[in-house]
Length: 305
Image (tube, rainbow, N blue to C red; front, side, top):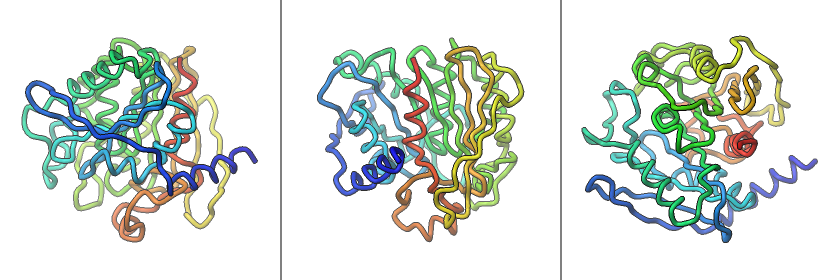
């Protein structure tokens, strides 16, 4: 019953999202933009939310539950904007059909400076800073976990897998708890790896199982599944279900996979993740509505430290 009360409150919140403010920060002479939503309190948890390719931070504000969850739970949330609506993650071959950031863009420096600013001004508790991203933003979240584990407490990647290029450069300074959330019917980032069937698909993706195994090994976890839990099929009409796969890891090194069975290249949610849901479904596959991505990720993040 409590869960459904949360869902009702969350859906009501979409009609009256809390106020967020736009700002910029200078990164190596380039003015970078972001949107931030701050609670009244200071020294609170901070979640950095990274959009997908072709998107911007405002899309994450409008099309995910992050603003509502942050308001209810009292944490700060920041939505940075990638240059050319994309992130310079560890991959250099990320789909030539769509333009990426300008050459030389240092998004690790951008996000690091943004986090450092929000810590320095007393907004964020440096021991409770988290990063989550979707698609290209998911790749960027993993890149940040690899390159700046000292800044973050946990990470989450939605609808994204590693590549050889991303994995070989991944040398985190310490283990970080990691959540992965991927759909088995994703046309852009195939669950089984390789190249997707979509027009804008890139090649060379690892499978989700390989990506999961990579993070388990980094975090000192056992190779096999700890528990496999079938989540309640709350919305049969979405024609998809969710399986939660946990790992046997040292304390505080957790790795968990949410496998969205028959889910597409979409963020699971209680409200549509696209302005034109039918078009999105035809291009990207179905969106699961049994769980909400932001709710699920925050529940994971809030366990650490």
